[in-house]
Image (cartoon, rainbow, N blue to C red; front, side):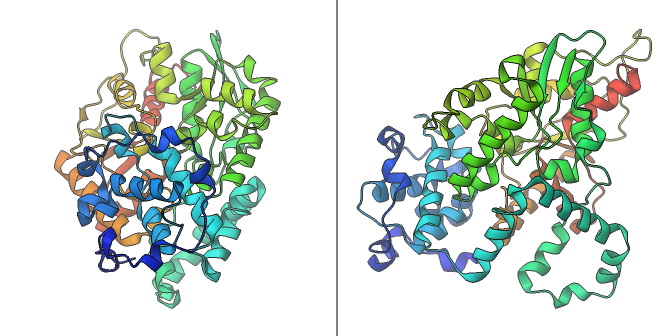
Length: 467
């Protein structure tokens, strides 16, 4: 949606656009204390990418919370205007980091989007079809997702993609699909279950952990999952990896499908329990994708009223660790050369900079640990990225639903990367990596976007800790 259609204050919205369309359910049933946390101080305003662009109160966290509170209290109804506003929000959670009152914006945000979907105020045929195919079928069934990945891989490596682009046949696509085509990630030949065994053990295991392989990560960056397992092995962890894993449900929760999100959470717990015997038999459950991790840590909230899963969900959330967080807790084994006499060296011609994924730094409050991982690699020069915590515009499917704002944020991020002189960018979220790679291709810049754990795994392999 172009910004010109949004340049209205809350008082400019006709009363018919705010009242009388649908009654809320999720926000009205939310613990009132969550809705009352906001103290209207405005400290969130300069951290919000949409407010920073438009300078409109309704495009700020404070403005959106005011709308959500009024809807929960019955003063306003769920309308199309409200739906468009909540989907204009990135959900980057920078407001949570800035907030002195500890506002749980993520919870309100998800409940509000669930009300929007229940009300159907944004429904139309094309949107309904895309959501049904992607959310309720592709990302709800692992075999369907992998089948789609195989087809896309065949299209990419057969020469058909090259031919379509060479003949400029993409011009025949509808405008929105034509804009999305350059964002298509490269599907890898082998997925995680082909690269990782069900159980892998180091010579002297000190911990036992479960490994989550993700959805986009599994198709586009399975080597990151292999690297994560290698790093865990090098740090004394026996790794249990379920072969068939379901989507964690973050995509569903962030897009108003809370019932499906709960179903995905139950399946994820079941997957890990089958592989590990019991969650009690694991010291930690490891994720290496920031967006997934932020959602995975809140299974306890998601399933708190489920009598069969509530206790298991609490245990799951307690054990769920981002890979950087886990390594910092147990202490990173320093990479060594073969024989262990001298530190190994990763010789990059140019420095490495670190982009902070929103749901790692804001959602999980993990900022120092990835830097600790990077600084543990001998020979790696880390250069701080200006505005490292500013959203890159990926934000789940935001680059699909709000391409104009997404592109603005991507350009801002790439401009800041250019200031560092770095040609290697460490990124710990697959969505961010896909976004940054697409932006670099568009600019014709030779940037390597790489997970911090992959850099550490390279150092271990160079030093001979793990083959």
